[in-house]
Amino acid sequence: MPRAFQIRPLRSGAATLYIVLGDQLDRQSPILGRLDSGADAVLMMEVARESEHVPSHVQRTVLFLAAMRHHALWLRDQGVRVEYVRIDDPANTHAFGSELARAVERLGAERVVCVEPGEHRVRGEIEAAAVEAGIDLQILDDTHFLTTPSEFSAWAKGRKQLTMEYFYREQRRRLGMLVDEDGQPAGGSWNYDSDNRESFKKTPRPRQAIEFEPDAITHEVIQAVAERLPGLPGSADGFAWPVNREQAVEALDDFIEHRLGRFGPYEDAMWTEQRTLYHSRLSAAVNLHLLSPMECALRATEAYEAGMAPLNSVEGFVRQHIGWREFIRGVYFHEGATYGDRNGLDDDGTLPDFYWDADTDMACMADCTRSVIEDGYAHHIPRLMVMGNFAMLAGVSPQAVRDWYLGMYTDGVDWVTTPNVVGMSMHADGGVVGTKPYAASGKYISRMSNYCEHCRYDIKKRTGDDACPFNTLYWDFLIRHRERFRKNNRMAMMLKNVDRLSDPQRVEITLSARSLRDRFGVTRAGT
Ligand code: FAD
Ligand code: SF4
Image 1 (spheres, rainbow, N blue to C red):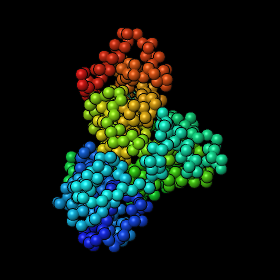
Image 2 (cartoon, protein in one colour; image 1 turned 90 degrees about the horizontal axis):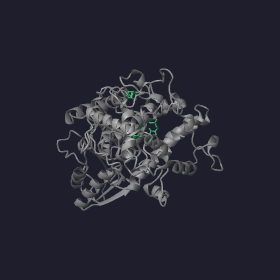
Image 3 (cartoon, protein in one colour; image 1 turned 180 degrees about the vertical axis):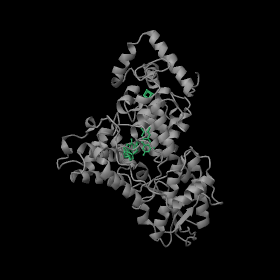
Image 4 (cartoon, rainbow, N blue to C red; image 1 turned 90 degrees about the vertical axis):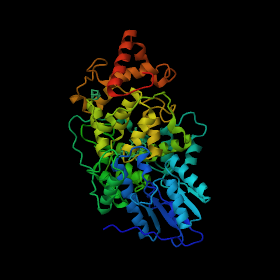
C-alpha cells in the first residue's frame, strides 16, 4: 500500500518553503544541500491547470504525477518534510500561484526557494504569488543542466548565427568528452552524421525497449487522473514509462546494452508500427530529471571505450545530450519569454483533426500520429520530417502545433518543446535554431521508411487526386515563400527548381494545395 502524505505545520521562525516542480525530480537538486530538515519543507503540487492549459495526454499527466509521488516518498525517506498537494484534494485550487499562496499562509513560511522552472509562464506565476504574499523568492540555477542560461548567452553574444555544431564542439572540449589531450575529436571527426543515414531494407527486428508495470502508486494516479481529468486525450492503457530513478537507470542500461550499437546508423529511419527502433526513449525520464544528461552521455562513452558500441552511434547519442538538448534550452532562455509567439512564416492555419485521432489516408501520418496518441511518443524523425513537416508545408499556426506537441508527448516541457517546434520544425523563429526550413517532399519519407509502399497516394506524383500530399504541399510551400527565401543561399537549389516551373504548373500546384488544405481541415484566414 502506498504511504500517506502527512501535513505537518512548520516550526515558526526562519522556515523556508522549497518548491519542487514535476520536472525537477533530481536527487542531486541544489535545494537538498540547503534545506534544513528541522525547519524547512518541500512543497509539491499536482494542479489541474498544468494538464489543461494545453490538453495533456493521459500518459504525460500520469507520468508526471506518478514520478512526483515516488519522488516525494524518496524525499521523506531522506528525512525531508514534504507538503504534498494531491490532484484529488478538495481544497486544491489547481494552479501553482494560488497553491503556493495557500501553502505560504498555512505554514507561515518566510521565504520561498525554487530551481529555475522550465517554463516562463510557471516562473511568472511563482513570482507573482511571492510578490502578492510579500515573501522573498530565490530562484536557483538548475544544476541538472550542463550549461546555465547566462553561460549560453555569453557564448551567443556577438554571434550572427547560433550554430549548434560550434556550441557542441565547445561542449565536447569543456566537458572533456570524446576528445584527446589536445582537444581533438575521437576518431578525427566531430560529427559522424554522414554514416548515420541508413534506412531498413527489410523489417527490422530490434529488441523491444524495457517496459515498467505500473505499481500501486501509479495505479492510484491513473485512477485519480481518470476521475479528476476525464477529458484528456489518449489513454493510460499500456502505460509503461519509468516513474522513478531506479527504473530510469534500468531503462538507460537497457538502451546502452541493446540499442546504442545501432542507434547511429538508423537514427533517421522509420518503419510502420515500429516506434522505438534503436532510439533510447529516455527523453521523458531525463526531462523529469530522473536521469542526468551527463550520466547518459558518460554511459555511452564508457560503452565505446569498452568496445560495446561504435563511435558513430556513441558520438550521435552524446551530441543529442550535451549538444542539442543544452543548445535548445540555451535558445529558450536567451531568446526570452516571447520567443514562443514568433510566426516568421506568417502561418495561421488550423491543426487538422487527424493529429488527434490518426484518421487519415496518408499512411505515414496515420502511423506517426497513432504512435503519439497511443504512446505519447515518436522519435525525432517522425516529429520533424513527418508530423512537423506536414504542419509547416500546410501552413498551420506554429503555436497550434507547439501546443499539440507540448501536451501530447510524455517528454513535453516548454523549454524543449517550444524551440524544437517553433524554431526547428516550423521555422517560425526567424532562423535562430535553423538557417533553413526542414521542408521536404514525400521523397524523403519514402527513402527513410516503408510507409509509401502501402499508401493510397502515389509518391511519384506532384498533383492530382492520388498525388502524395507531401509533394503537392512542398512545391506549394516553395512557391508561397520563394521571395522570402530568395536571399538564403542554402535554399538556392530548391528555388531554382521552382523558378523552372511554368506559370500553369504553378497555378496547378497552388490550386491542388488549396484543395488538399480544405480536405484535411487546414483553415487559414483569407482562404
Ligand atoms: P533519442 O533519439 O534516443 O535521443 C537521445 C536524447 O537526446 C533524447 O532522449 C533527448 O533527451 C535528447 N535530444 C535529442 N534531440 C533533441 C532535441 N532536438 N532537443 C532536445 N533534446 C534532444 N524533445 C523533448 O525532450 N521534448 C519535446 O517536447 C520535444 N519536442 C520535439 C518537437 C519536435 C517538432 C522535434 C523535431 C523534436 C522534439 N524533441 C523533443 C526532440 C527529440 O525529438 C526528442 O527528444 C526525442 O525524439 C526523444 O526520443 P528518445 O528519447 O528516444 O531520443
Ligand atoms: Fe506519406 Fe506520401 Fe508516402 Fe503516402 S505517399 S506514405 S502520404 S509520403
